[in-house]
Amino acid sequence: MRTSVGIIGAGPAGLLLAQLLQQHGIDSVVLEARGRAEVESTVRAGVLEPGTVELLTAAGADARLRSQGSEHRGITLAFDGKHHRIDLYALTGRAITIYPQHELLKDLIAARLAAGGRLAFDSPVTALEGFDGSGPAQIRYRDAHGERVLECDFIVGCDGFHGIARQALGERDPPWQRQYPFAWFGILSASPPSAAELIYASHERGFALVSTRSPTLQRLYFQCAQDDSVDAWPDARIWDELQARVPTADGAGLERGEILHKNIVTMRSFVARRLQRGRLFLAGDAAHIVPPTGAKGLNLAAADVSLLASALRAHYREGSDEALRGYSRCALRRIWRAEHFSWRLTSLLHAFPDASPFEREMQRAELDYLVSSRAAATCLAENYVGMPRDWG
Ligand code: APR
Ligand code: PHB
Image (cartoon, rainbow, N blue to C red; front, side):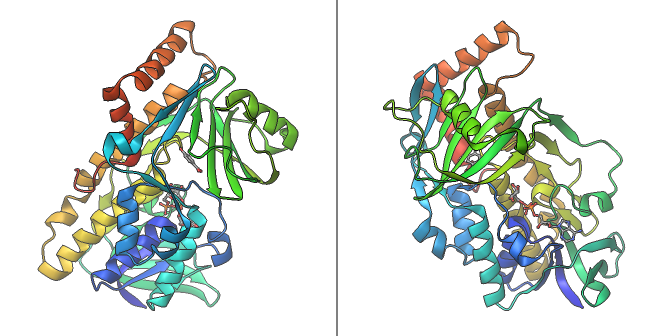
């Protein structure tokens, strides 16, 4: 099999890239290790920046998110028993859209298949070759028929943090990274939203987040120990812990409901030293990880592939490789902005096990500043809704 761009991974990064390339008339093949049902059901964050919605529109995958997603013009910071609204829209003129990521994946997959795009599930990639030389690059993979090879001009590794593309790039220097001394316990609950907008709560027992998925489904998280286990948390204990951390505006409790799903999310900041070698490029979680505070992961992946799609277009249409050569530098600027923001928000809102009383007062001072200064709130809001597309 032969194509122009071989894409590893059918997560948001790989699927969106394939769609954007198609808009530019560039042929691609997406190879995905997992089955379609699993890809379409994995629970992930669901906050879309306006720039991401624009890209999904360009990719022809925005119809359902426009009718079923909900626009949020603000978020709430909760601490010391009080709610403080950050008016994203008043501060930036922009709003976020809440739409479950697995629904977005369904939309991208449907759009890909409707466009006649080649997308192979249950096809794990096992090796990458030839991307450093001048002949075609080769992607070796396995499917129901056995060992196969896909030949291509370019390879893009959109295969997530545990994929093989970053290893194939062969970076000797260690990546830039940081671990956090806690994790998030996430639940999906069959209950209506407890609040109209997301609540980020800082409490001495630990951080908590009230998010939503739909009028009948809530997503909530609370900070837990790194080595915590799902089994240690029966439903009643989860609700009590969340309630203890989240003050409700009108004194009413959280909307409790049947817990449909529980998982533990690890917290890490990570940036690969190189995003390119020869004709192999990395995008999305393969290239960087942010802790989930601020929900930048998907948005950053979308920004990466937007850059790559334009750079590949310049290669095929104009014969210019300047943008491809500049991909790492250009992408890393936005990546580091989001890394800084996610780290800052994580540091601000969580209870660090070894924090001194001085450090806790520093957190309170910053929270107080954020909710009492328009300049400070604007800085938070600008990052939260995402830097404009033409930034960087
Ligand atoms: N061969 C083929 N596919 C692979 C291989 C492989 N060897 N290794 C991993 N994959 C697939 C995974 O099965 C997964 O479906 O690559 C995909 C990577 O998808 P994500 O982990 O979602 O990564 P990405 O698309 O970069 O995600 C961007 O959205 O889902 C969130 O947390 C994610 O915030 C991140 C953002
Ligand atoms: C989510 O809805 O899953 C979510 C929302 C906001 C975050 C992280 C996750 O910061």
